[in-house]
Image (cartoon, rainbow, N blue to C red; front, side, top):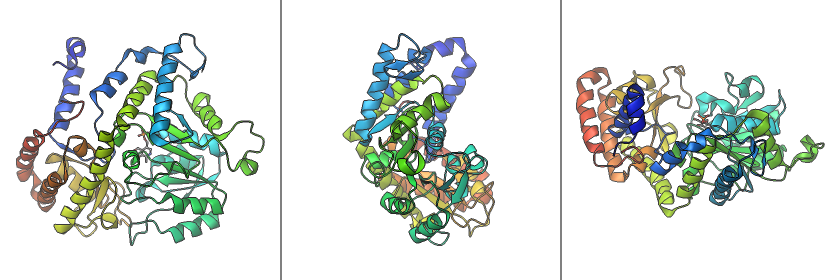
Length: 431
Ligand SMILES: Cc1ncc(COP(=O)(O)O)c(C=O)c1O
């Protein structure tokens, strides 16, 4: 079946590029930890006529007429989101993960307030207070991160910093932390200093849904997420919050709004205009899929695959940041090698293994080259790969890393083997 018959007809240049990208992804091992594959249903909703719609406001309270049907669509996404995560309130309008996080600042902080978050080189996201981002220039980041020795959070150290600096909010979440996050430990610290506790689960939401990672929703004031990445929805964000502001007396005595109402105000009209109804519809479709036992099995398998990949690489003598993984990602630690993380990521990509270079805890190299490579298993798991396949993947990674200086001689052979191997799997939504 021709996937894009109209585009093929009207814009062959764009058609060719979209097709090429799908073929490229189907013939390579996509190991970017923040990616997976959306289903045809999610893609159809995302590409639907809802793209034409304007509906500023919220269901039942729009600034445009003619929104009775799209109100039902947004409510469907809200109800499914609540069911999926067991949250009191969910706002499904943020255009992506960064705007979702931006709404948290607008809800909880004033310009110049202190927040505790992880710097990007420690594994945090730009929006957790990093200096080049609005969150670092308009607010003051008190940094924390995994210990350079163990690669894991040292809660005594984190508590000490929190007691000394007394931030108003603590972000818990990461783009590159391979271990489980114990939210109850962070909650204890936040409670000691009357800080808001906010989790960003963009990277790990499917693991939480599958029950293989602790759940922050019951413990945190606000939880943000993306609906793409391992959740396999459209590119968008959502914000879950408690109704009650437990620090109201201290920080917001005047406010007539509860916490979830303040989140809604922050998203619209605070930061955004019209919601993307096509994307919200696709989010509803993704939430429905995420409520199935099959999705839970996928979440469980992501973690099993990452563990097996880590085990296989450790057996081959590789060092991993933090010694391994209990999430969806692992970080190869090349500090003792002459080549950099960037050298390795480029050689892997040439050979058909797509990943990204990444800092490791205590990295002596610059963020522009790093000593690490981050590898994730969500996409391979979505294709149907299991633990025995991870052993093969580890074998190819090993061949590339052992041959970095002469990768040009080896790459096409390895790439061919991987393309052949990938033919044994189905790429959801692609082919
Ligand atoms: C932990 C975390 N939060 C938020 C985001 C931001 O998402 P987006 O790229 O959709 O703005 C990312 C993206 O990588 C992320 O890793």
